[in-house]
Structure formats: structure tokens, C-alpha cells
Length: 101
Image (cartoon, rainbow, N blue to C red; front, side, top):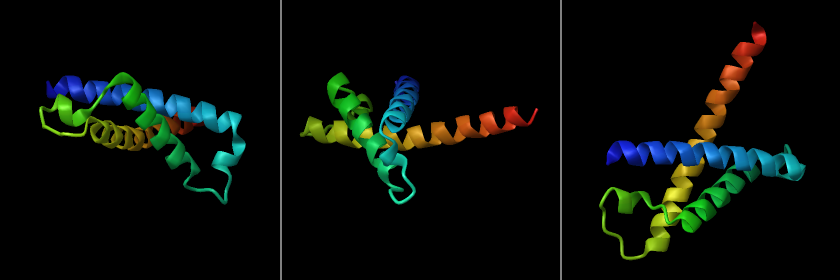
């Protein structure tokens, strides 16, 4: 159960990262120097929308009762969006290391 939840969360984080990068490419003002939080906000919105549309709630999957399912989706979307940041950092590190060789 926990392994399934973590795997799903990791895959969703990758999806959020890819979609966020696509949005940033299409809308360059999001990643502008004076708008440092644009990427984080975009990732959070993408994560929340993805969780709402897929009915993915981490608290529900961990069998934690919550009376407002929308809140579970929002929390999960935010967690996934922060995971997307970690996925981005890891992929950037691999890219930099491979570029050296």
C-alpha cells in the first residue's frame, strides 16, 4: 500500500515536472528573474489540478479519514509539486554531469 502510494506520487511528480516545463517554455514570463515563485506556483497549480481530475488523495490512500476530499487533493497536489522540484533538481544534476563527458 505504501509502496504503491510512493510510486504513484513519484510518477505524478514527473508528470507535473514535464507539464510545468512545457508551460514555462510556452509562457516565458513565468520563469522571469523577477518572478522567482512563478515556477513553484505553476507546479502547485498543475499538481492540484492533476490530483483533482484523477481523484488522487494521499491521505485517502494512506487510509487517513478526511471529511473534505477536495482538501486531500489540494494537499496531495502541493506535495507532488514539491516532489516535481526534486525531480527537476535530480534531472538537472544528471544533465550537467553528462554534459561534462
